[in-house]
Length: 478
Image (tube, rainbow, N blue to C red; front, side, top):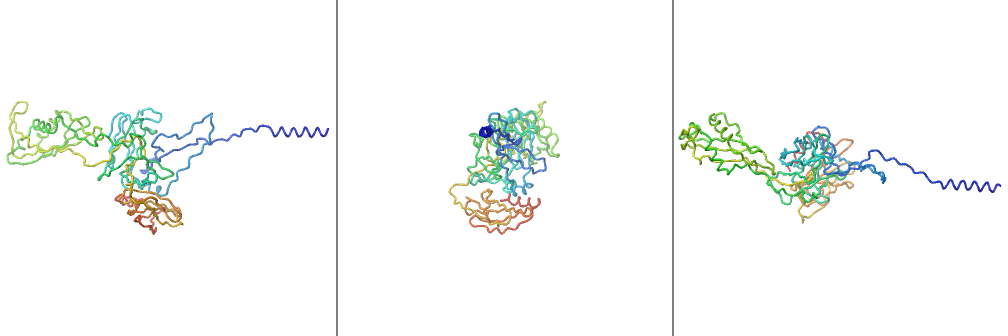
């Protein structure tokens, strides 16, 4: 009997051990996100912080899936660098344009960038066309100091770039950011004094806090715009026909045509995007009868072909000069057929359109976000690794600003030195170092040459807004 009792007890324990285990429910953190190439628009003007946006559509939130349970791992936080933080107040201003989405618009930014925006270019993230006004934000970085203020270095992978100017572009409607619809582009013209060959258009994204630039992958992206940057307005039949029209349409006052009296008179006028010409006010001493004659002539004037910039009709201003040298001729004029004096036709001496002589790098882009007009460092130059001694005790970060290459690069800390790989030999640079000590940021700048190590004998100064802006201006002059 005792034997049977032990046998029953053993079987009960065996069954208990073989009972299937119950599943353990692991709760995922609510609202877990996956970020990809997220760009944070710097808030440099005291306005509310702009929303986080990216330069191309990305999925920011993973929807629940009933068929597959995945482990959601939060993206690694982007390390904000002290250099970026302390220079933020010196960034260039945000420029905000309010435009309509149903018309072509040419935007001219403060530093001279031209941006051609076509009608119906933008859509909401769900593909709908925005119904209200569009807020188009532009930030320009042409000086190397301006680029440093946003920590915009100039490397593509490990290759050094020479910049012709950087932009940040963003479009929004209400509280929603906008995307360029498939197939839509924006035309970009970067002003330049002395153009360099080989410039291309790059798009930027921060990788672990550092900016990295990549050539636009789309076949049409970065393509040079087939239309000229500027086409002046033109009168039907050309400028000679305009001269003929003005001479035959304006009744010139007798007092302006006195023999032996030489004078010149400039009439400024504009031609609007519809082709309508309108005179601008002239000096008060000009005879009123002449002013009235000019106004009447422009009222009857045929429409012009308007001026265009990046293929978009714009207003342009012109100057028409009349020179009176004492000669005149008589011809029939006026409604009553009376004799009226007027200058010889050749005395309408010159026609000067107000044309820009600025040169541009011109591209067509399928992206917004950070954009950079760059070229790769020319092949064949000897390269080296440059070292800057920083000391082991302090939290220091260093940037190199090149004087002749219009380049700005980041390096990495290795013990008591900062290393900058693959830099051209013999280049003069300004070393910008930022130190954080006891919670206080300070900054130092020193000149060096990539042919020799820098000893790191920096003189640090506490950072305030006034001195910071002075240093940025100094770098912008390089």
